Length: 98
Image (cartoon, rainbow, N blue to C red; front, side, top):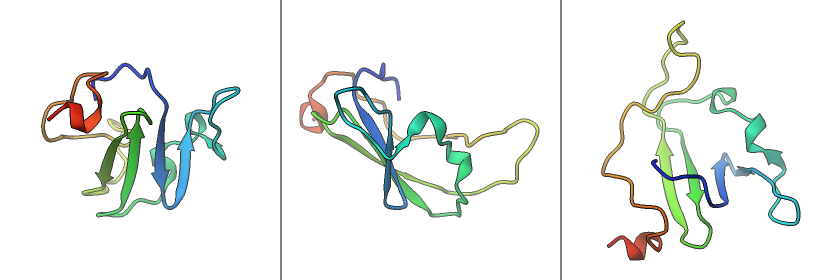
């Protein structure tokens, strides 16, 4: 994305939230550092959300377009493209990026 990971974030996959817990702050049932996208049985058109910066609330929907068999070159999920440029960090959320 081009952001510097300054803010809290979470992934929501199949009704369950995953994130990185912080002492004295937000907690999650599972630590996102121990769960990998490749751990899930993805099918084409499956979707999940990624929320970054709970104050600015950047909400992204990620859709699986195709599931390829594993190869020696790619041992993990790969993002092959994306639309539009990433907004700058601290721009104020979607409203500040208009």
